[in-house]
Length: 439
Image (cartoon, rainbow, N blue to C red; front, side):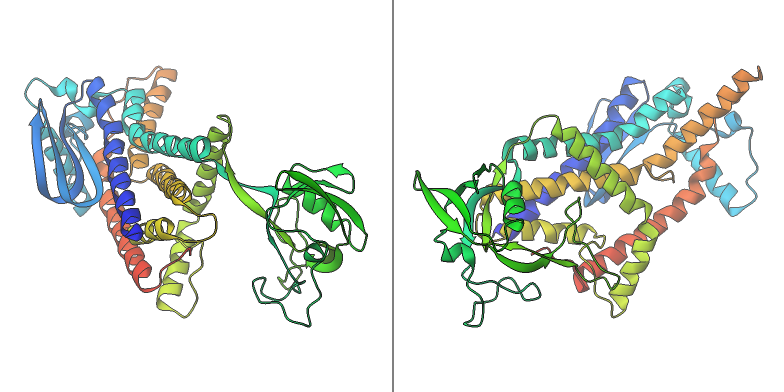
């Protein structure tokens, strides 16, 4: 049941994100006087629609996107010099111009989209992606300020009974051959809160682990709080081989890709994890960081698609960092909503769902900025090119050029649409036959 609830939440938020994305285009377009004839969420057959004013609002059967129809998207043939339509591409462009011109009512040529200035075109076309970024900002703010982020404390969650060698599974059972863990031998218990170590007050788990790792083989006084009262103990951390980490917390690897181990003090305890709210200033930093991370993924999308083909139709294992499609998003949502474990409750699951949906909206923001039609970035690039031509003409004191013939990009838009469709189908197939799991 929890799995289905997670999927349902993801579907509802995804549809809301699509709807708001299109609102981001529609509202500024109407503010600038452009007639918006259609506003729909989804594609394919119409399930419901209602006309209000001069716009038809509706819902279509396939919830994989949405659209707003801005009247006069393409400049008519007379405005761009009646270009020849001898080739297949030329005929497609001319058909697009004619279809766009047919939507312009008599006497309303001034309300056509192509008539807008470059700044206004940019506002309209960037409105959709920016709306996705705002949605991500709100969702992450709810998580960071409301639910908080996981943070370790100096309260002990578990106390190991033996020292597990570095190469063994950390969750295996202790045997008689294993060396007793010094924490348990000294009398430490789950629920104890470490207050000081060797006379040094500790307030964070990072501080405590640094002191433990530096105390190998030394008898060390430690004070813990147990049931509200201080308890003094003496522990002697053993010297054990443990992985070495760099300044960013990543394992250091040798030339063969194996973790580098170093001799450090080992106590055999683990911390309790709690969720702590962050400051408001942390929200934009996290949004910017995740946007940059997403942009690096999108920049390597062709290579990732090649890897996806190899793992889907070959013998290679699909990695956890593989790109996913709509099926994968639904699977992740269900797994997050139904995950079980110590310390995992509904708030942890809901926070995970909101974080995932925020990441999805950031991905929509970044992906839509790719400067290729029919993506919003393609229209942005066309508007910038038109503005640049006009600025160059103004500086050269030349006649103001007419509107850019963006209908010439229609053949490219069709080609990109086919590629994106093929990518989408491949992702659906891969997510079904070789899914990425997070649990």
